[in-house]
Image 1 (cartoon, rainbow, N blue to C red):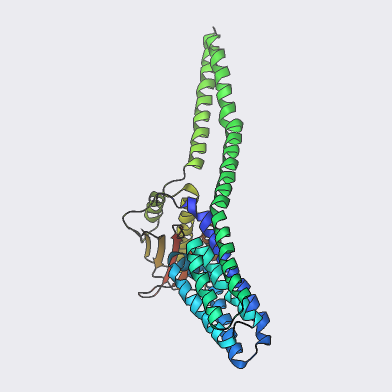
Image 2: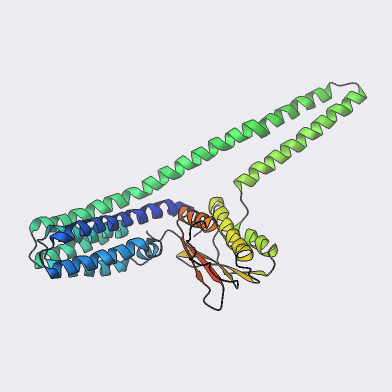
Length: 357
């Protein structure tokens, strides 16, 4: 739990792939519904479509749950089992929808889990009179998804390697254009200083050396500040102390975060505090930061006038749009709603620690 950057790319890719499986199921169900062989089959397809749409729409909330509690796929298998029993596995669209569970199992569980789900799905298809081809396709779907999941660590490592190379090249350019040139000028001025017999000229050269040294020091500090963003807890404490009526609550065992995450989380908290002060006229703002084995949670509660008319997603609310974009970039789930205790607003951001293994 020392850093959440390593698994974040892999986890986000895994989450997106699972969502694409749900999207494919939605399309297949919608296209095949008019060809349902009976009213019972049509009702089962409609139920499958509605539940799949709800999962797809609320994926920011349900996606992390699926990766942390992988047994939830049992409910997905129960849903497809109901569809198979109602419409029959010989209906083409039903057979294609039934492949969704082995695909999800391969992505979420890997080889062992996908084998169990694919075998169970194939057994259900066979028991309900389905053909051998569909049974084999269940196994192929699970194996294919497991293979894709196995490639994700390599993909994540390649992305991290490319990002690290780009950052090294950027820092090399920055050092060449700033500190390196300043130090070279400092060396030349120091050489000239040793060869200057005139006292007045000596003072001028010494002043140039001192000025170049100060410039090099300032440029070095700027580079170090860029490399090492302030830790999140000190940044939140600084935000709290600068905001009248604000308080900060911290849990024990908080992890060390990489600079990009620290920057985004600090900016999210600062934007929420600014919204509470400027738009909600809040007198008290409570910032909370906690962590458990699965996720880091940042909360900002205020006692202001509450959410604006039309809800937080009304057109023109660009501050919240930027917060959602930041949350999406770091793979976190952002929730905004009324404060549970009394008037006001509560913002909650949950950042998983790469829930899939």
